[in-house]
Length: 174
Ligand code: NI
Image (cartoon, rainbow, N blue to C red; front, top):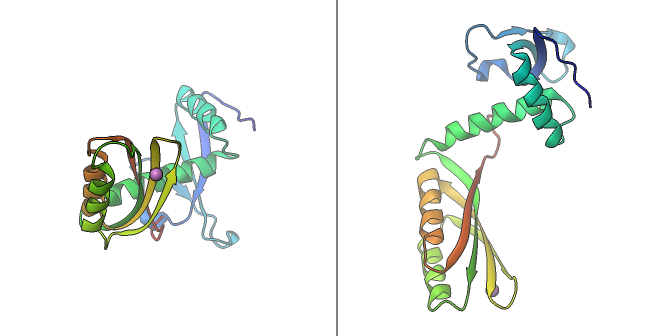
């Protein structure tokens, strides 16, 4: 993949629905109307040369084949992040934890916390990694604040070596 960079760089990309985007002044659309089969809108963006060069390097590292797909993903990511700010909104995600099951009472404490959230924890996977370490991945669904609470409570338990909450989206609006 090669991109050309010019001092006054003009990149074009497409997005699925212009009405859902609130772009700042100066960002304008070139709608191609009926020619587009899947309601894709093409629009132009002015960007500093050095910024675009860095962006191209980044998306090459991340294996994007086109700028358009990279920019679409950036936009989706921001929209999903915005949804997560609403603590009452519904979210889905995973909580991953690594712990040493030899730590006293740890397994039963973890189980007890998970039972407190039996409605939100919809599936769990447990892997006995080695003699000491267990990996658990919990699929969670519920209010954003509850999902965060589940992750915080599990990850903060003594003996849990590492934990990570990954929130995602069903993608209705992105
Ligand atoms: Ni185990």
